[in-house]
Amino acid sequence: MSDSKGGFNFGHVGGNVSIEAGGDIVGGDKTTTTTIITTGFKQEEDKQAFIQQVEELRKQLRQVKSEIEAADGIDEDEKDFIVMEVMQQVKALKVAKDEAGKLSAQQEPSQEKRDAIEAPLNAVDSLVSKVSKVFNKAADIGGKVKNIESLTKLVPILLSARHLFGLP
Image (cartoon, rainbow, N blue to C red; front, side):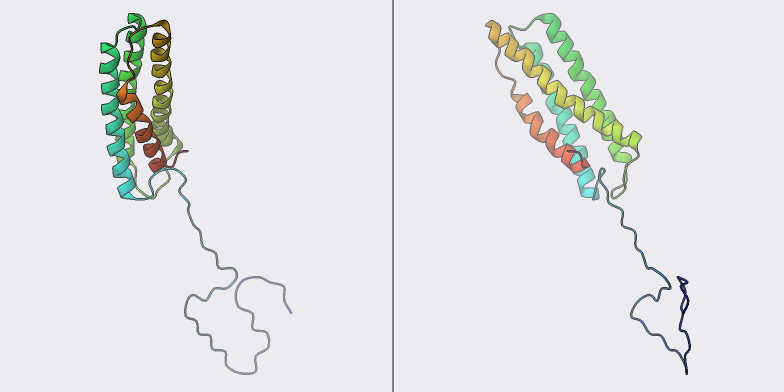
């Protein structure tokens, strides 16, 4: 008896050998490879929904910018700084949207492309926190600051976009 692996080994056969199969006849181990996409888009529809949500995030950030500029009770220098950050994120989300548009569905993006999309999403999350702190600080000081309505709309859109791209 032989210990060799692979091929067919019939040993001593006293007649004809006939092999029938409903599928492949494989000598050795038959293996299949499954690629699991952890980030990127599972379907083209996910990609289109992501692009749409990123555009909605950009729209809401522009609204946040307008509400910050119109707010009373916030230091003008702080306003300028936050407005500048908001506009930087609007631009960064445009880059993310454009990068996402170039990706194929059902294909894991390169780390570079993933970073180009993930970084602006993370930055928006951080920005929401900063804007909230500035408005809370102004309210604590006694400023006549109303809550920014657009800010509350950002979080669900952001979470949905992250999910579509496969991010936690």
